[in-house]
Length: 213
Ligand code: AMP
Image 1 (tube, rainbow, N blue to C red):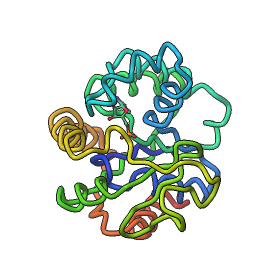
Image 2: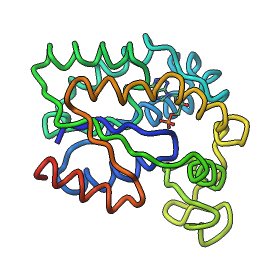
Image 3: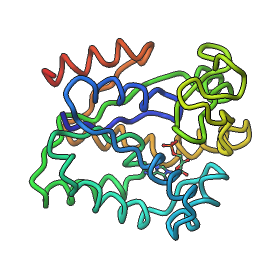
């Protein structure tokens, strides 16, 4: 399947993407993950992106499009892909449309995971991430067995710099201003699938029904 996953930070895009890749072998492409690796490795891209990410702001479109133009040409995309956290702005969506048309690729749907703001705020402030393997935990609903230590790789589990209350509030404002308009964009493109994302299982079932996967 070839999907765009839309939705505010914390709506569950990453979880849904992981569940779907297990179904049909398509690849999850998360621009946030790509950027975090670049920051950790201290690459030129990472250095350019870090200040935007720490503040909860969007990284400039040119940098993101540079990443995605290369990433979508890689062989593993032939089996299908789930775009998680991209596009985030109307210019990104417009450029993606041209890029996919040049590559001869058609999208199945742009899925909007609709989650109320208070649920998102609660989820993100209680989320913790392993700095080594990226595993996600939640201090309330899915804690690590030993506090601060990853169950999977024994790495350090921390609150991301952009998941402090101040940065989250900014990320949600940025989402409403820059990313929420994509819902109308994909509605006009005839690709929108709007789902009340009560649970990841509900979302996955709805997407599989729509795409036949
Ligand atoms: P995420 O893990 O998807 O929430 O992304 C974390 C951060 O990476 C965001 O708050 C942005 O600073 C940056 N980022 C990720 N994807 C994009 C994108 N498509 N456009 C601009 N910035 C992005």
